[in-house]
Length: 209
Image (cartoon, rainbow, N blue to C red; front, top):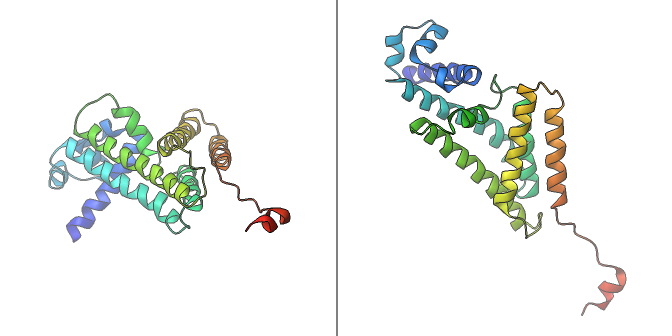
């Protein structure tokens, strides 16, 4: 158990380092310098740079889930939970959960054209994220909160594009209002798709058999 705690502690620092310097800069030697450890000590936990990178991505995914989905899962099914997921994502960006911005936005751009196990891991986890967004949209449709004609894949694509756009503007362009702009755009898009339940007029109610 002590060894597992030590490994988890190492990975937390590795995630933050990769967030700031990129996954390609995350090496056994660089991390050993950062932690004041020997390379041989780190090799006992990670046998190669690639193994370290993949372990860091998986650790980042656990942090991401804790920050995005754990707060949202307590909300009622449908529109409230979908909106909670969106707000949790923007809050996670605003609070700097990863010091270099969204870990997965950075990793996606860094490895989108580099085939191999690291790219495969990033893609799998991003597919899981997009799939979770699509599921939340479908649940909102099933609950009668969103228009039945909404395409879950299309809406998930749009929402993720707004999230990644907010990350780009906030961190690269230093736009202090980027997250607020993204939140307003998300709310307006989702509100435009909501099903509005209207009460029947007294005459219409009387006319029902």
